[in-house]
Image 1 (cartoon, helix red, strand yellow):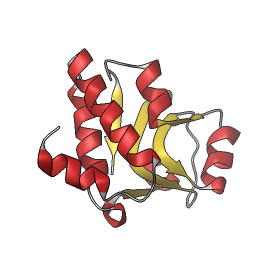
Image 2 (cartoon, one colour):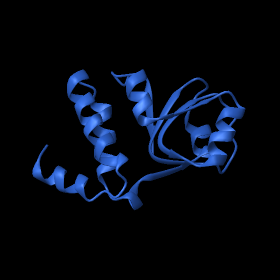
Image 3 (cartoon, helix red, strand yellow):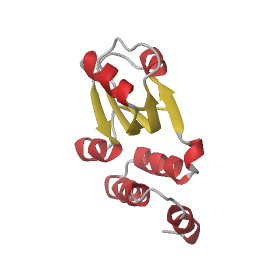
Image 4 (tube, helix red, strand yellow):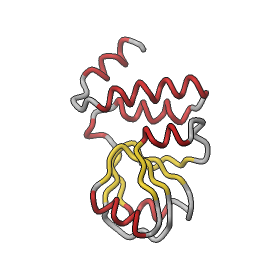
Length: 126
């Protein structure tokens, strides 16, 4: 990793974040999947700049059965009436409940990387 990237990663207070960023970059190199590098760059930014996406936005932009990735937190505001797979850095408790109610799945970004190493068919929301 470059010196700049290393400094950005070392400033993170959550011990999960640097490990995830390194894993995302490694996965991007191994599988030539640009999506993982993009997510890593989003997570290198300060935590206050992470995406905070409400369920209403997921409902508006995702189709039924689609996979959505959020490089930040999913919040439970709004209605969700589509069974979507949502991968995110973090979820609120109400968001997890509402996604499960309609038959969707909540995954961490790490789980999504293992499930879909090429990153195909994933839509990023911010």
